[in-house]
Length: 215
Image: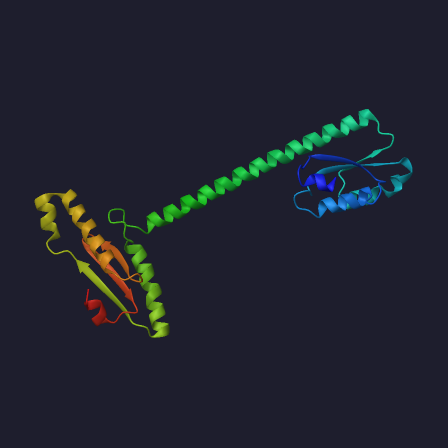
């Protein structure tokens, strides 16, 4: 029976108490030792004179018992009960999977919302809120460690004139291009942010002023 379980996992096993080599109690215990088998329902058949040892079969993990000779009506009734239990278990598995899926979707949505809350929609750079949080973190690190920290405010000259002359669509394109230039020029550890309007903030950890000036 145990060798067959590696190929096929049934919903119910009916076993006898008295068997050669391994009795029904030992068989139930062997099932419960395997995570893949522990949810299989097991009926143990026993003689009337073994009813005083009924507690042993339930402690071993049996779901129910049958007295020998087995009454077909009793067997049918207990099979119906087990069938309902299996159906409930299957429904719970489906519900748990659905809950896991919903939880995963919510986590992904929350991550996207958090990212959106910290990102400038136009340039896709970190926004002012994100910049302030990052600057506070790096400032604290610099104070504790004595490591240098530089910041640059980059402003686009005559940007209002671009908007007035060519329109806001062209102005938006200019902002995107400047954002791309700044991002491609910065180091990996630097954070380039849109601070507001045509202003950009570049936070440069581990950089002295003369190094930042080379930008």
